[in-house]
Image (cartoon, rainbow, N blue to C red; front, side, top):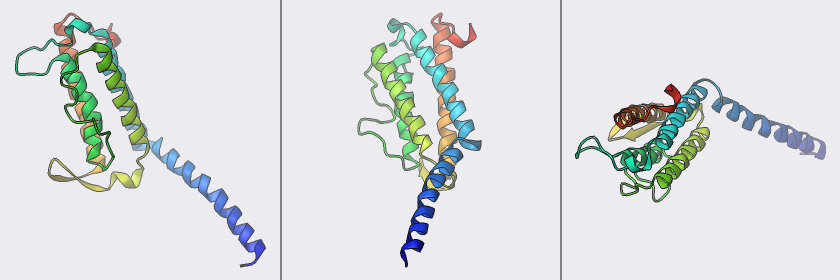
Length: 179
C-alpha cells in the first residue's frame, strides 16, 4: 500500500470511528432507550423523594410482621437495581445482592445506597444498544431477552413504588409529587 492510500485509509478510519460512537450514543438516546430512561428517571425521582419524605423513625415500620419494613423495601430496590440487570450479563458490585442491607435502617445510609444504585442502573442501561436487546438470556430459570429483563426491572420499580406510597400514606406522609 502506498503512502497516499495509507493516509487516505487512516483519515477515513479516523472519521468513521467517531461517527460510529456517535451513532451508538444516538441509538441509546432514542426510541426504546429514551422511553426506558424517562420511565426509570420518573420512578427513581418518586422513590427517592418518598424515601426523603418518610421520617427516619418510620424506617423500621412495617404493616405486619411478615412483610418488609420501609428501609427493607428501599434496600431491596437498591439491591434489585443491580441484581436484575445481572441477568443481562451486566457485572454487579461484590456487595450488591437482591436483599442487600436488610439490617441497614439509617435513613441517610439507605438513601445513599438507593441513589448509588440508581446511578449505576442508569449508567449500565447507557451501555446497551439495540442488538443487546435481542440477546437471549436466562432469568429465574427461563429463556428470555435482555429487553424483557429491562421490562422486569421497570415493573419491579413500579411495584415497590406503589408499596412505598401505601406505606407513606399509612404513616401520614403525602407523596411529595401529589401535594
